[in-house]
Length: 609
Image (cartoon, rainbow, N blue to C red; front, top):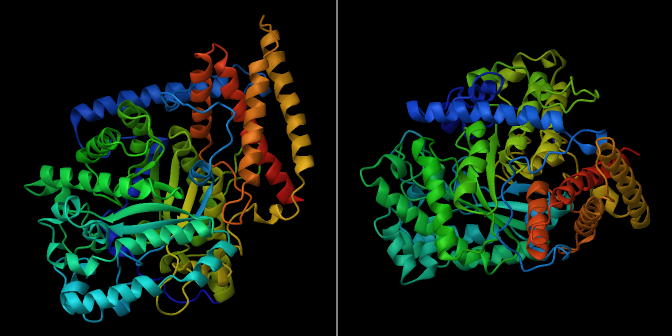
């Protein structure tokens, strides 16, 4: 399908308000990284933290990889391992772990539950007038149609917008995880008396709770359908009480982020935390394909946000939410701050797996629209030179954020969209439609490759939308229009002809090479011993990578460990629990890192043949 036409305005209003804030934060990587909100004491603390981080990073670079004959870094400030583990350190990964830790190739099911008028305009035909500057929200759909009619319209939409044919198409094109935007009012009414009713009290949707009384079973059914297809589900609280931002996709059309700025903000925040606890417990225990819960979508950032996250993490642990359920936190367009906060904030209050959600769009600000599409694409080039001197600036920035977060980062939203100005100022502009499509294709595929390299997963916005084919914002349009590859999982083509024996032999050779390098380095510095723990760690890492790749989830294979640093910490924690924190555990950890890197290197070599 063609990729012509002016870009869908989409979420322009919500990003325009941010100006160049996101890019400014990225630019700060090359200078002083400031905190995302003004505070003299916070600024001082953050500056000190940055200096410490730079020192750590310099030390890390000096220590490096033992396979290159450099000194071993012991721990590197990684998130702490679980406090204990009943499982042996060599226990095969469970289905829940396979869903959670694998590299996630995803798509958003936007406007399936939390509605957005630009995606499903037919549902807004009778919507009431909105109250804010950002346009109409789902609340106006309900008000405009009345409760009875709205219930009929919404239930028909929930039952038909995404069907089994969509699921088959998604998986055929590499989707193994979906991000599911929902709002509190989709879940709470289905819980009935007790927590459901009390948490709806005082919200704009309380008078319309009956409209959503039968929504919860449909969400559970979606989890079950996804599991049959081997697809994980990231549950995203897109619309929260308050709300958390001033955007219509929060479920209301107000321009006031009351969760943070209302007179009763403290009460609203506690209500939001209680809702999140209810949601986490409702879905995590029942569905092993739940890969995480996102606390808030694109919240207004400020001094309140990190505190809210910490309070919620504590509440999860106190309420007995499954300890193996990952928690995803939006970075509030302040990725440098939150990539460090994972270690300085989250790790101090919980041992739970916490992941940053970063959203990448380059089509909304005047600055972005003034940059040619080929320059946007160049920024995400991974580079081919051995010294990575040709790596793009945005790719380098994303790599740095990933390192700071120990790869506990995902891209919850991205698209193939480009502002019209990026085409107008492009050198390809004079070459017409085909050059335009080629530019968009390169932009989209470079994003996909960078996300595979530096993050634990990514989710295209969005799966489908009403209207003409749209390669910028619709996953169907992007695939069928040639802007994305036929399969977004780069390893899908390897599964059918997989040679397990050859992979095993490759692993043995890599283990021997790594062990020799490790032993040689320490021997040259007076060290001795067999370094058996290093061999054990490498063998475990290779066995885990093999298990993930060969595991059958809903008839699909070929998974790769995405959240590798956290997976290693899980294994390390189990080892320490089983053996009483052995002194050579650091060798085990380093060897696992080398094994998982070697596995990815092997896959890359096979793809290039």
